[in-house]
View 1 (cartoon, rainbow, N blue to C red):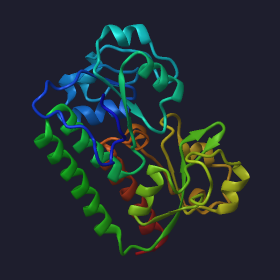
View 2 (cartoon, one colour; view 1 turned 60 degrees about the vertical axis):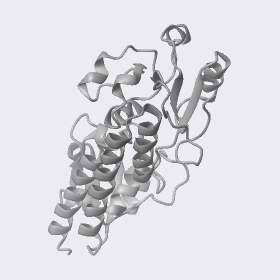
View 3 (cartoon, helix red, strand yellow; view 1 turned 90 degrees about the vertical axis):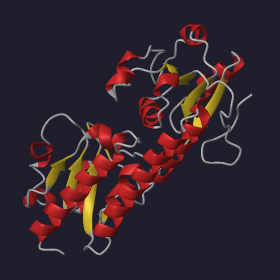
View 4 (tube, one colour; view 1 turned 45 degrees about the vertical axis):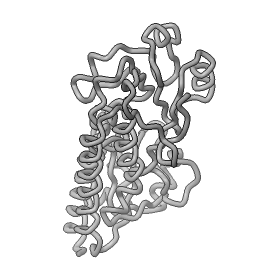
Length: 273
């Protein structure tokens, strides 16, 4: 049986055998599979798997909270690709009890996403395409890192939900991107990946820039009454594309460029280098 965790030695290679029939248990894993050239091997995926367009045509087998196990079995998958940080343990156990191999995928950092691309390519027999996609991802992010390495740091608050307010800690992918762009996450030291925070705590940290992935409404209007904050007073509040940052897929390059652009504009208006 296939077994393992992406990014560790011993990841199975398709070799000369027939590439496996794959069920993807998260939208961002579906995106990575397609980017690795393995889209044709996906026989089932979850709700909200909408990128690329071809992913919309893949049969649905449930969502992040409930899977249709009968549907999955009927699709005759060889392997289910699960999200290490999101797929419930009971779902993994149930799939394995049904005789379906489950591969746990780590996507906590940009490097993890690149590694997953390469690993999916080995799994599906699409290594050249997958290696090329991983190389592009690494090169694009390294280019951004070099461009912003010598910039003045700015204090950044990341809003990922509004009611209640949720942010990201230093271990979150978005926080890593903020750092790559020369920003300092004002809640970087908190425990947990996406902690809830009090409005008063945000005000007390006095961020110079606010970036929001909420996707609905106007973040500037939401924060307007907290005018004592530098970001509000100077109008340095930037909406960002949600999927390109909250889904750890190759599209994080687009998200990273948006973050870097927002921070660069903030620096300019703050009179920083």
